[in-house]
Image (cartoon, rainbow, N blue to C red; front, side, top):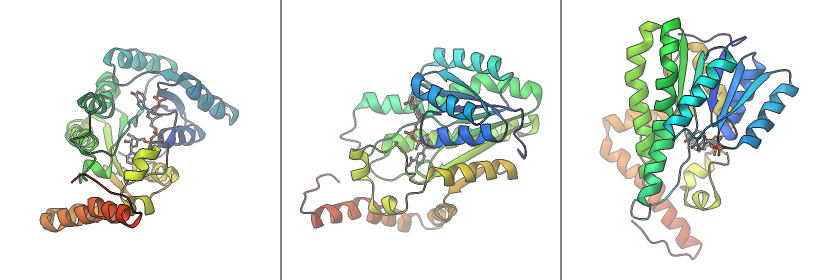
Length: 278
Ligand SMILES: NC(=O)c1ccc[n+]([C@@H]2O[C@H](COP(=O)([O-])OP(=O)(O)OC[C@H]3O[C@@H](n4cnc5c(N)ncnc54)[C@H](OP(=O)(O)O)[C@@H]3O)[C@@H](O)[C@H]2O)c1
């Protein structure tokens, strides 16, 4: 179902204090939507809301840790109330790391699954019934290319995004005839505060070179909604790799290894540093 105009719509964006979510909230508000801004940092959300208000838009900060099901239930009720109903839910909150499975502590792996996957599930569970009752709604899941092809040193992150892609694909078929459209967005590496210095250093050189700006992801998401698309990979060219993997899994695996672990090792050797690990 195409989302061609946003004027007067209620839109809830998680992870709206930074990066893609912040920019998307600004764009939705500029197009006339009333926007609910979800994240944990109240003062940052208030700054985004003020920025929107200064441009004549309407935005409401809703502080919530999406990993906490009780906080999500309260946030969903608040959003329904202040927005007068949620027509568009963008499940965007998330974080990631680049580290080997052996180095990754299990508490953070669990937390990543709760934030990136269960957070989206909780909020969707809370808001979908009203969309179905109205016979109208849009759900966006901000997944990742790592939710379609899992690179090394991203095991817990890729698992959370594979889970999100699976949830969205199944749900999409269930609800499409009830007026609810599901869009899954799979971006490559984006230049946002998502990457701390340590993670940036472990990012494969090809991903560092091909990093896209958050504007590109926001444009692609809005365009995909306007066209009624169900999945979009940004940049589009990466989507070709899914086809190659289906046809030649061994070749794809070697390519992934060559452009990640081997490339990083080569880079470290050239810089005179030792790289331990697989
Ligand atoms: N950057 C990339 O390369 C990349 C690539 C593919 C996919 N993605 C996905 O795109 C989405 C947005 O990432 P970004 O690049 O814009 O990252 P970002 O700039 O770090 O923003 C992440 C947002 O998520 C919020 N957040 C994190 N944990 C949360 C929690 N427990 N509860 C509520 N909000 C939480 C943060 O707000 P608070 O800290 O205020 O809570 C922040 O607003 C994520 O799902 C990410 O996995 C990113």
